[in-house]
Image 1 (cartoon, rainbow, N blue to C red):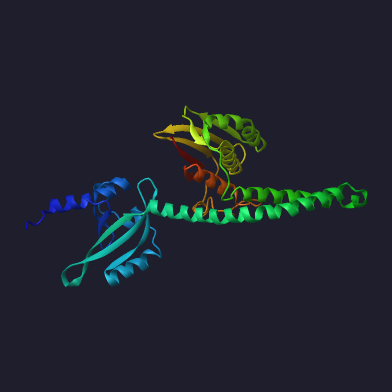
Image 2: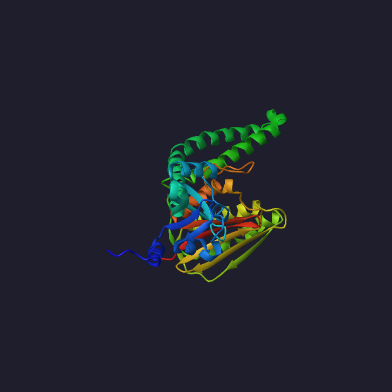
Amino acid sequence: MDVFTFEEQIDLLNLAHDYIVIRDMENKILYINSSVERDYGWSLNEVYGQNIIELFQTKFPDCFEVSHAILLDTGVWEGELIHKDSKGKEVVVQSSQSVKYGKNNQPEFILGIDRNITQYKKMEKELRRLSQFDIIGEMAAGIGHEVRNPMTTVRGYLQMFHKREIFSGYKEQLETAIEEIDRANSVISEFLSLAKDKLVNMDSGNLNEVITRLSPLIQADALLRGHTVKIEANDIPNIIFDSNEMKKLILNLVRNAIEAMKENGLVTIKTNQIDNEVVLSIQDNGSGIPNAILENVGMPFYTTKENGTGLGLSICYRIIHEHNATIDIDTSPQGTTFFIRFKIT
C-alpha cells in the first residue's frame, strides 16, 4: 500500500466538513483546513502564528485554564465551545482536542477537530420555546375563560357601585379597581392568544396591503412618543397568511421597536423578496438588546418592561411558527432589526 504524500494528506484534510486546526503548545495556529477558511472567513496565511483563543474569542464551558489543564493531564478534551468568525458572528462547535507527543513524551502540538452545531443549538432552543407554548396553550385554553367570567361579574358590580350616590366618597378607589380589572382582562386576552387549539384562517394576501392599512395607527402611535416611522414597501408576491394574526404580529413588533428608543427615534418597516422568500424587517435605532436578554427573547412571561406581561413577543413567535416562517434578530448598540422570512409557495 502506498503512503500518502504530505500534499495528499493536506488535500484529504481539506475534504473534511469538520473544522480542523493544529496549534502549538502556546496556542499559535500552525494549520487550518478549508472548512475553517470558508466558514470563519480567514485564510491560513492570515491566521498562521496567531493565538487561536484570542483570534476566535473562544468561550469555554468553565474557563480556558481548566480546559487546558485537563487536556495536558489526560491528552484529550471534549466539550462545547463558542467561537467568533471574522465578522464577529458566533459559531457553536462540539470540539475534540488531542495532544501530539514527541521525544521524551513531551507535548508538541494540539489537534482540534470541531463540528459546527450552531443550527442544532438554535433548533434545540426553538424546541424548548415550542414546548413552553404547548404547556401554556393548554393552560390558556383550560383556565383563561374560567378566570375571565368571575372578573366580568366583579367589574359589573364595581360599575354599579360607582354610579350610586352612597359610594360617592369612594369613586377614585372604584375607578382604580375597574382599571386594574381591565388591565388583568387584557393580560388574559393575551394569554388566550397562546391557546394551542386556536383557529387560524389562512388565505392569499400581500403584506404591503396589511402594512398600508396599519400605517395610520402605527404613525399615530409613534408620533405620541416622539418618533418617526418610515415604510419601504418593495414589490413582493402574495403569500398565505392569516390577516388578523399578521396585523397582531406587525403591531407587536413595531410597538416594541417604538418602546426601545429614546426621543426622535426612527422605525423602518421594509418588505423585500429575497430568493424564494418574502422578508419583513422592522428596524429601530435604539440601544440594542444585551446578549443576556437576547437569549430569552420570545420566552413566555420574560420581560424587561416595568409593566410588561412577557407575552407580546411570545405571541409573535407563535404566529411566526404557525405560518411556517422564521425569525432572525440583528442587534448592536446602534439598533435592532427583526427579520421575518415567509416562504413563497
